[in-house]
Length: 628
Image 1 (cartoon, rainbow, N blue to C red):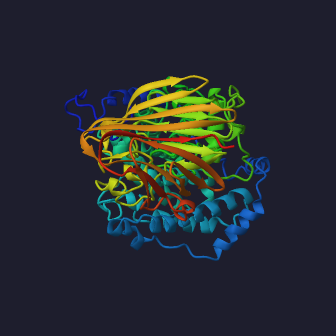
Image 2 (image 1 turned 180 degrees about the vertical axis):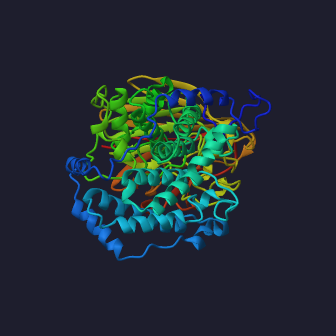
Image 3 (image 1 turned 135 degrees about the horizontal axis):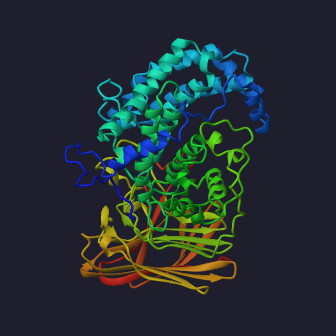
């Protein structure tokens, strides 16, 4: 199914008396909960071994070659440091100036304190850290909210007017529930009571209210974006592990999740591609897999949601989009370094019998929940690891309109697409071109998130609008946003000798006065490299300016009248330029703060090939010859 930008509510509900936020699937929730009640253990289920089971923790430490001394030394240092207070002043940064980082960095450190102390005690088992764990838990439970500042726009949570569930609070709830269940009576009764009450109030009870009334007032529960599986994984994990819940409560949470998490799967293209980009596949689909596996283990295999038929294509599409090495398409809000998690890819491959890269070593890892779920030692007997296949010369996603073309030394990503996907950039026609594994000419990826990123001012950002992408700019006009701003595939002709992808890009520029705008990618393998010819052909009702652009993290020089040389990280590609009229090279720096500290230290450049005079029709063509 075509991805949706916003959650879609069915116009006609099964029961007219139900609230407006009730999904059409709501009548399925009660039967699903009834089925779960007979499949879930009455006392719940957890991922962490009991603290009291010292043999289990010794076995885990040995199997993973955990350096217990290293972890306990870190915890000992924390014993000499006071617990930092909730950074309330930093929480208000997002409302004041759009900054989310100061709060998140400070608050993450407080939660890492709990992780380190808990890991040390669970592994060592001598009781040295129990008092500090109790104090840390008490402090975290006293925080005014577990919701991130960027997700509390109206300050309703932090100021106590409303409780919503977000990406952070759901995962925090799961973490605290697991620790409470594992430590049990080793923690003081007041800590256990406070922890249970807080997880209930901030995670479990709000979700139970939605599942009982049908009023799913947390938008993500009805969404097809990554929030749906991330929050559902946390809520379900917390409900399964938290002491004191009734079996009916656990069953209702899991049953509701089984119905509504399928909306997430409906958000993928029919070919399995995700419009949210590769980083959000690792995050969103990764949490979907965490959710599925947690439920499978809790039900002893009687519920295995990974075997739903609509799971297989999303599970394999993103891993199969790898260009070369660990380089993936940088589309939507992706960091230039974003990749499909090999940890997730390998585990999914074993679970679903898909070819996948070898599972990385789990030695030394204690991160929760990933290392306790995606642990090869916990795979069911039916799991089989299939060696990865060599990357094919071509991977084509017809619904997402993405072509990956590969030779040993050069790779291409070419995309048509539309401007109405989640985490959208206005980037119809974007591309990446690598030389020996280096993205010499490339889409520049996303920007560091601020309050503007997810507001009506989103496309003021040059990394998000089409100015900062390697696409045309007809009549000095940028691409429009929304689904109607979409490329149309005119030709998709693939053969061993050449690949030809031709796109109609005119709908992406509705105000430019175009009568025609096509972009053609012609890819011709030559020995271990390839020749790429990129041709933009345009026509207006009357003469107007026209330019096309290539973007890079490196440099570009015009070495003679007809040739440009792009260079980045020791690799270069030379382009021969042909145009219907004289042209100039116009270099500008793309404004904005790219995702990732590594890329913020580099300069993103836009190299525009601009016709010197307005024209009614014409073309600009660049050919990247194979490197010697």
